Image 1: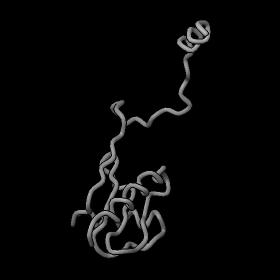
Image 2 (image 1 turned 135 degrees about the vertical axis):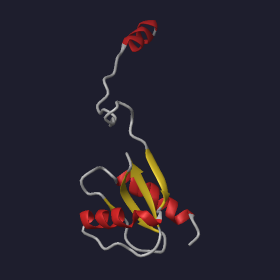
Image 3 (image 1 turned 60 degrees about the vertical axis):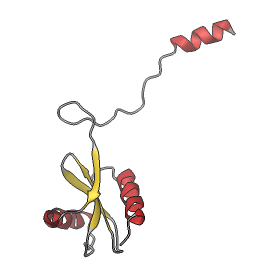
Amino acid sequence: MFAQRRTNRNFVQTPTTTPERSSNGSRDSVTIRRSAPGDGPELGRLAHLDDRRLAAGPHIVAERCGEIVAAAPLEGGTTIANPFIHTADFVSLIELRARQLPT
């Protein structure tokens, strides 16, 4: 048993994935917020990228590195997301938050 603990203590596990890092070397952060009036053009661009129609009204958005990468409408409709990056976790977060808020 002592030998087993000693072996486990010296065991080094190499991570299988590397966290995404921004240009300055820090981890990327994500902001979940309500859309602002000035977000219209960026939401339109995101809808175009996702090949979907942008729902009218306010949205809950996921913003990473200053760019909106996913948006869920508060008044019903289809969630849109950037199809060129991994956004599944962001979509889950904003859809959950959209359900929590009163319309």
